[in-house]
Length: 256
Image 1 (cartoon, rainbow, N blue to C red):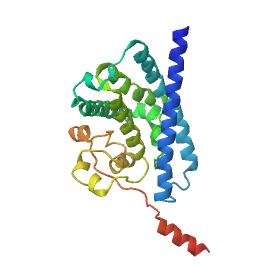
Image 2: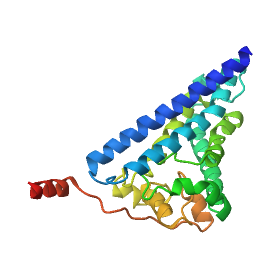
Image 3: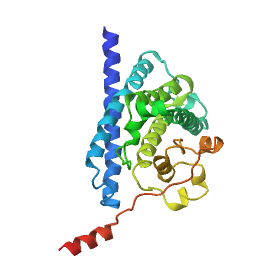
Image 4: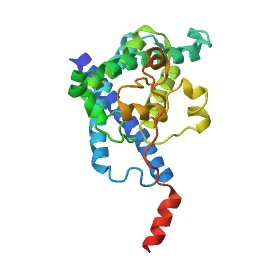
């Protein structure tokens, strides 16, 4: 009973951490959107409440395997996570981050592409695409079936691939930030990044926006490699008309 309670407590704690991370990051970028592009989310309050509800449910699902493995790591050393920087050569630290991101991207590409088959789409993935247009709150707005498919990726990797705890934190940070910024309706990166040579291989909001426009392309998460190899890269998309501060100020002056 004691072990079961410890595992349950760890799972609940990790779910709470995932939920808090989502609320902090999505909330921060939603605030940045209001400051940078006032009015972009106007009329989307009901949609954003729905996105938050689905995302918090997903956070609970993501937290369960993470919490179980966190307990197993501390109590029994189940995972390949290590804390001593010298346990592996220092060059392995950045390599492990790239390995994790590449493996996660591969898993995401193929499960995401499968989710766009008619039956899985109707059953699960339609929840995510109900956000039209997606906002900063939509990053984790998944049906529980889709959340389960995403929740197992990183836990599976920590069982197989050695990673320093700080490198794992870096992976989770990239995962969270890119998941949010790719949905928020505008580019956080300068044009030289997303429209330049680097943008030809990295996924930013412009690339993922095209997926939400056309559905049948741009399935990747971090990198465009699988989309290019499999002929599903649809290039970059546009954004809805962005209302600038100057336009809002001008409208406000006209109403006076």
